[in-house]
Length: 132
Image 1: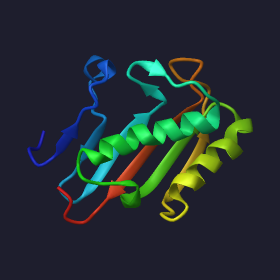
Image 2: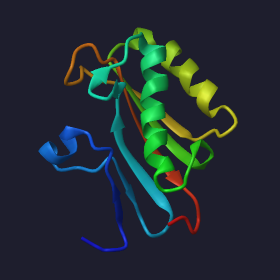
Image 3: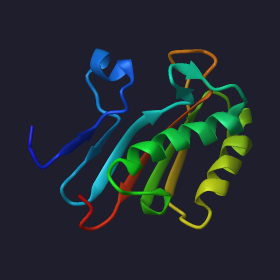
Image 4: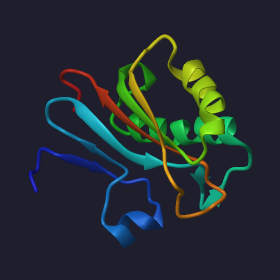
């Protein structure tokens, strides 16, 4: 592991259990944020796909804040959803959060998550030249 790579932890128990970081900041200014769900303080936030998407993105934004980046630095998003019927609601949340940023984005339908009450998981990549 290179010392110039900064690994960011959220303190979630799964990071140690499964061996991953909430985010990884590379020396070139790129920050990769792991999949985020609407789990906050160990509890799944109530709500449907729209609400879960907003909370999930806010979890990711919290990781970015730890390295001095924000929503405006996001260059790519990935949204994983469990049902095609949720496309519009998750898309609405994305538009509200990123309409003026316009990152590259993908929405992918998956068979499920570790907890069946989760219907959305998001990943983001952010970049700012010289960010360290």
